[in-house]
Image 1 (cartoon, rainbow, N blue to C red):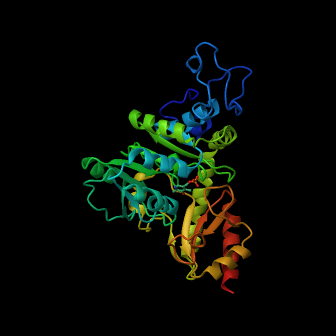
Image 2: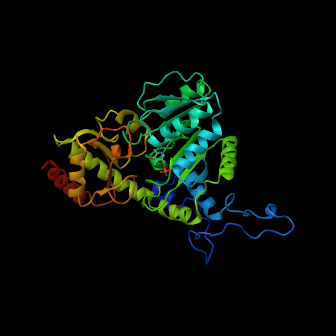
Length: 376
Ligand SMILES: *Cc1c(COP(=O)(O)O)cnc(C)c1O
């Protein structure tokens, strides 16, 4: 369990200590990854005698990571091999033929693709609503999945109000917390029943692993999803779980710089008449700001904007020194993704820029030079 964390501890303190075992002389702060598939069993009592029998069910490295993420989300956590594994585990555990699920029109496109390819053919009714609303009646809805801020458009949903309305109608409420991270918002505190997220992005933040998780205070749901995970096997390996836990310690620091960079980049982009559609939920004046500023504890490092054409985005990325052309987001290095190249339904010049932890002044200079060069 967490080493002596107290309710009033700040984000930096909680990130550093989350999930660490208590101090034992001669032992490391964060125990190294335990590489094992089977463990020695007690010859008489078998798996009943020890917490570890087989790593699909039990892994000491994964348990420490789950304690850490659970500490930050304020619930019990199950780690998955990827964010998609966590999201689909929730959908397939909860939804039965005839049930209705309400998904965001503007959320992560792979979730919508999964709903079309896999949920609808099993007889699950899939409905959509834009993250910023308006939302239909929740009557007859089994599961409401919100994604806020939504990736990649960065609209936000009012979790408290929507959870109350959905609960009134008997629906379960899930929030995809990938973009915000548990330092950006704690959906379980806002009234959501369950959080799902990709840990691949800002949570682990080093662009070197895939991870997903689910967190909830509902013991029945936790058991059902744990059963799903055990039978489908979508668990992270020990090394990835350990790397993610090690990386979690700097989440507060990384987000602080990423968010400060995003604020500065937003101002730079807004001042340029050659850049359209700049969105960042942390800017007073952004349509998402009223809800985001009331609901979020800090703003993400992602800014979206439109450069008009795919060609101009290509020239911008070629000219930039400090902006990697890459998908994903939340890493140490600033990166930009022209989403339409993945078949997303965004416009051809739409860019999702993920601010890294470079010095703000360097990043601004490089963006200015690259945007200027892209006009040529
Ligand atoms: C990336 C992402 C996922 C999927 O996570 P993977 O780790 O890539 O499987 C789910 N939801 C959102 C909002 C994401 O950005």
